[in-house]
Image (tube, rainbow, N blue to C red; front, top):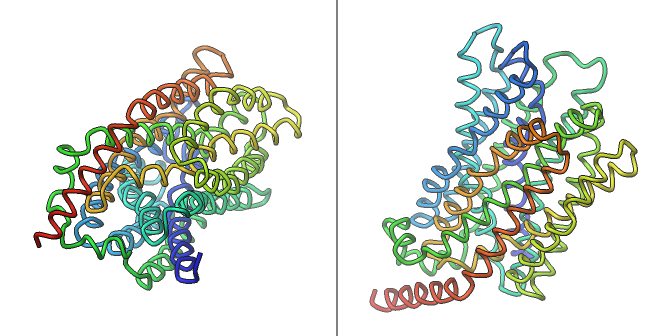
Length: 428
């Protein structure tokens, strides 16, 4: 990897990490937010209301993917990413200074939900866009490694947000201390803006910018139906896996295993650390066995070993809790690491930003925000602490069928679209 590519990948990763810090910090403080903005005599009702607010960010992710996908395909990847990271700081700042329910009544939860919706809109253009930006600067032989590195960068932001939670929950911290990480997140968005402004547009986009579609979404529905449906499936299982690890495990340990919330957040660092490191490993592995085979291998691992992770997490011993976190982090990384390398090949360059971002974010909207609520409901209703493993295995089985069945149709669609692109370019 040459110097310019290393710099480009680093800039993409740092910008992605900064944005995911802003996006994740709300999940870290979900228990605190539930009492301040959704007070209730019923703690379960209060928690569900806060999960509802957390999920609001996923409602607007597909719309954000459409907006920033359009900008990215029509006016450049760099412009779309610069705008998304700049806007992300605004809702994070407003959450940090927003008075609670006791001060301004129902306006407090309404404004909180609106802020989460704006965060979701920005993230809809960031996560996939950062990967597309980096991968279009690289080569096919490095696509898996770059995919894993960009995916791991979002965990850098999540880990920083989790560390902020560990600090805030220390004894003696004032009640308002949870607001400081939100205000810090607003400031770091300025750093992301500077990094994106100083980066260079991708060579691949510069080659096809004159053939970009006026309405990329129409071309997708006409020419790339199968890749679009596959992208939705990928986003769906990504949302279920990631937000079980990022957002639900703290609730799982504190609510069902009687682990104090501060200790639960600290233990979650092992899961996040495992995810962050192994994303790169599994991404690099896909460069040797192909991203598609790597994805199918991941589904097999999830079906086979997710139950073991939640068996270990039910044992109130430090060694078992750490092993359970490490294993779940590895299972999530096995899918997320090569995910972008796989998605990148589904769509032609002139509709790629819209195609990848929209399909992925629709899937994320379906499962990402709802998974913590659904798992809480299923466990409370059935009393079965293995429900997370059952749900993740079910998603993996469905995803295996979709990915395996759509293989040949995806390849034909991509070749057809690229042929049309070349013909259009020659005509111009």
